[in-house]
Length: 337
Image (cartoon, rainbow, N blue to C red):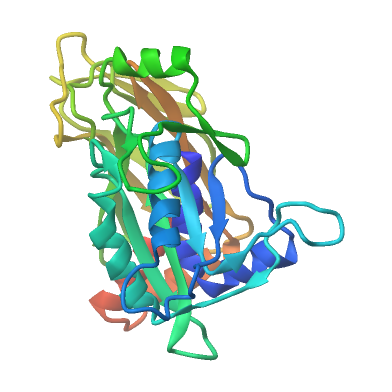
């Protein structure tokens, strides 16, 4: 998971708490984050032309770079006392779900080629269900370069993200984009199942999906730095599909990489291994496991399973008590997120 996607998922999980944190911490705009105040706060009958232009510029700039997130509904002007571009205060969007639908309808007409990976979500203020925020995620594009085609200030321009600004793409950078080969793009997923008491085993299948437009080779995933929450807890692995993967075990982890003749087609999902986790009290410390995955021509990505001893105790109580399957599944999902 890249930095932009991390930000997007954090806001999706924390909602208004994340917005409040940005403002309290005076979060600055960055390579991956941009705050936008709607030109009319969503009061019009359609997306304001200024908002449409800003969307097009962001799609071009973030899509031609490493991706990024737009937070619609936060002021980030540089009129504060130290003249810094930081999150200042909320300027919430009226009817955020409607504003989201306008953004969705505008995406395909912003750039050429259109960026198919753009996605949005909205949420309302806790104090006012009619107002809120819209978050736009623009991943790095395999179809770059993207040129703005809207009539207006940015028409026919190519942008890249440089620090906290969008800049015109220099000729050399633009030329490189036109000859850049498409690359694979992989992400991780999970499946889980539970073995009922007295075993109390949780099985988690680790999956890798190629969401790029070309085949992937040298796909790998490794696990290291394992710390279980108590002396009676156990962590083990079962290896999947020995014809596809080469495995290596180390004192503090496990590594899997696809065999040399294996190619993973776009939209294909493969699974290197399944982790089995046995939980028995006492739970004295946090559960921590770190994973890394990637492939040829795609940079390494990391994710962690990190949960406090209190969370593990609650999970154990849910699994061993009279909880419904839905409650158990909810906690297992929270374990791996």
